Image (cartoon, rainbow, N blue to C red; front, side, top):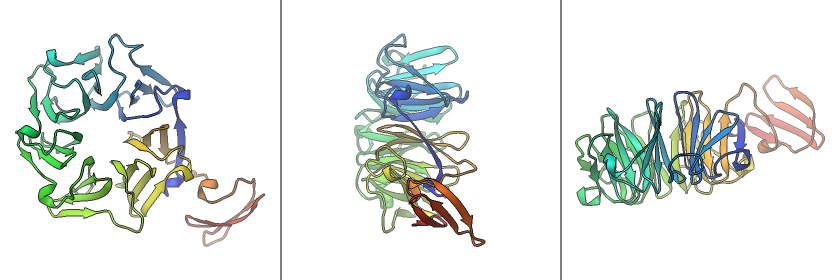
Length: 342
């Protein structure tokens, strides 16, 4: 199915969302979707939002939410001003210096196995930590390419890949740092997103460009038209690579080729901030203008997004070869595959 044939639904602050810019997303075991923003945390059940912020929680500082990660029955919340919080069956807990958590200003967290977390400090490297244990801080002075870290991705063996302002590093379970990208031909530049590809390579954004890196080297995304402001990546369950950009909407790279979803296809703006796929396979897009859901229903709508005018459709006729003729109050249209002509 073409990217612009999915059912697109939009919510924003007028629908109860805490803030229109959705910075991060996660889903807990009870099915709730959790959405981070600069004005607090929203819990969504598919119909309505419940907001958790400085006005509704017994502590302050949770408004600037930068990262969400689920570990079993616990939701970890990274904030830009007040460190780390967690929600589990016992309620909310805060984790700061008294609990051995070293960062007050955070950008996110990644699961490290056996209860460990890899934490991202704002311009302060990363740390490996778990409740009740002392944190191990890793920064530029201890081998990291740069103290500014944008993203982490677990390697499945207790270590983590680290996207920094100076490229891609790998930190193994023993905290040994390897400048992983530079040794494999990665171009210089900041790495803002890392995803594991189905073939085992890593899909990365470097300097706004998309490519794949492995022990065999680096391969850039090529084509006549490729996104140049990529900032977030996500592989969907079908193996397609979703690419969120700063000003060109959402793209997907798959066997169909490169597809784009932007203002022309129903988005209210072209800035994509976060991406998430839920357990049902629906894609959620966090943007600067609210939350979108891309859902693959058994039927699809053909409308102005696909080249048909805004007139009323009065007649349909499908030829044996599959060509669809559409009679509308503003003219006659022919649809062959994904192409519509008036």
